[in-house]
Amino acid sequence: MAVLSLDHVNIRTADVPATTAFFRDLLGLRAGIAPGASSIDQGCWIYDGQDRPIVHIGPVDAAYPSDDIAPFTPARGGGSVHHVALECDGYDDMVARLEGAGLATAVNDIPSIGLRQLFVTEANGVLLELNFREG
Image (tube, rainbow, N blue to C red; front, top):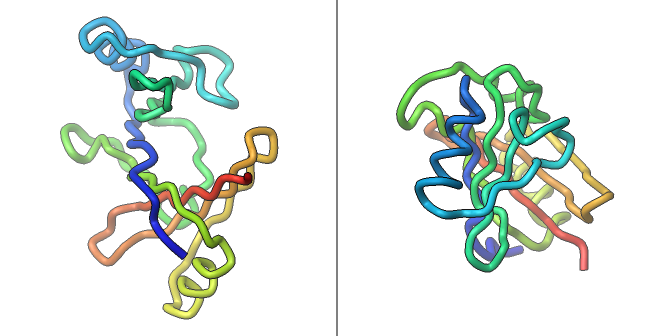
C-alpha cells in the first residue's frame, strides 16, 4: 500500500461558474464538465498543463458519496475546500488498515473510468479521498 501523489483538491462553492472562470480565464487552465454533471456550471474539472484533472469544482448543494461520514457545511476560505484527494495503490490493504483503526469510510466505485474511491476523515477533521485506479 502506498500513496503515490496528490490527486486533486475539491472546492464546493455557491458560484461554480465564477470559480471555474477564475481557474480558466485568470490562470489559463482548461475547464471541462465533471463526470456525472449535467453541465460545466453544475460541476467542473480544471486540468493542468499535462491534461490531468487537479481541481474539482462542485456546487454546495451537490450530493457527494462522502456526505454520510462528513456532512458539508459551506464556508469561505479554507472551509471551502471540501476534501483532499490522494492517488493510491493497494486498495485491499488500505481497507484493512482503515477498518483495523476503526475508521468509518464511504466507498464509491466509478467503473466507467476505472476508479475506486475511499473517503475517510483524518484526526483533525480533514476529509481525504483515496483514489485507486485500475490498470
